[in-house]
Image 1 (tube, rainbow, N blue to C red):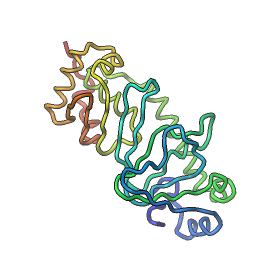
Image 2: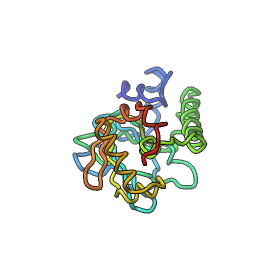
Image 3: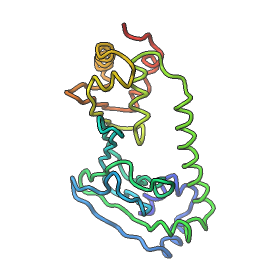
Image 4: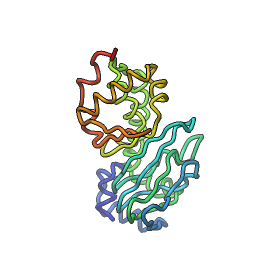
Length: 229
């Protein structure tokens, strides 16, 4: 368990003794889930600092208008939406389902203030991560928009992912994607087929599969290329 926690950015720089001192004073619970079992659902209250310590989760994020969604596979260790514990909306923004057997460590939110923040390293890490996410979102809004349709497709997917690694599945109709990109359905279809020919994604009915998000975002020739006719 200690090794899993120390791999998380929230605990970077802390020693095993530091984490032991914290866990000796807090109430925590290990929960085991079977394959296909929902761990947390979209809209459910986020009242605990939850960490995936073993196994994998499948996470599904649905658009506000319920017209498209993105699913990802996230391996342990992973802190599950710690930012959702605070702010005006303290509910989970995605649904998390066990992929195989997995274990979740849950810690009551109140202990973040009574114990965790007594350790300056944890406090600094926590604030830095929240600040980084906020700055990243602002940068994405003001950042240069790719001119090619392929580049805009990459941007569309990457901005909606929890992380930029692994397999992604985007469930969306071609017409909807074309509307979001302000393009014709034909142009979007050409761009997607071009990316499929380069083995960057796979096309299925109402589904786009990205085998490797790392490979997709490392395709600079697609980001600034000419827009399809």
